[in-house]
Amino acid sequence: MEKVLEEKERELNAKEEERRQICEENEELKKRVELQTFNAIDVERMKREMQVVERDIGEVEVARNSWEDKSWDLDSTTRQKFKELRPFSSNQARL
Image (cartoon, rainbow, N blue to C red; front, side):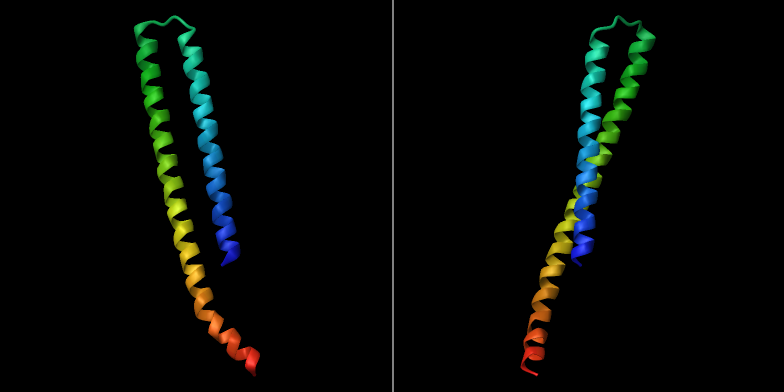
């Protein structure tokens, strides 16, 4: 159970790092866009690209939240199983 929890935490951390990198890339792109002159076609294309990036960020956030919920569920299950096993270990010690 601990290994599964650790794996889920690593995956969650990886997703958070990926989200952070995407946000940084977004900011860099926004700065570059502000420094350039554009025609109307370029502006529309960039708006669509930004919408795609924002959608991707939303999907990553949803996935991260899902992993976080799963992590909490796993933690709760682990605690419950540990509590269930505790009496058995006490009985084994008496034998």
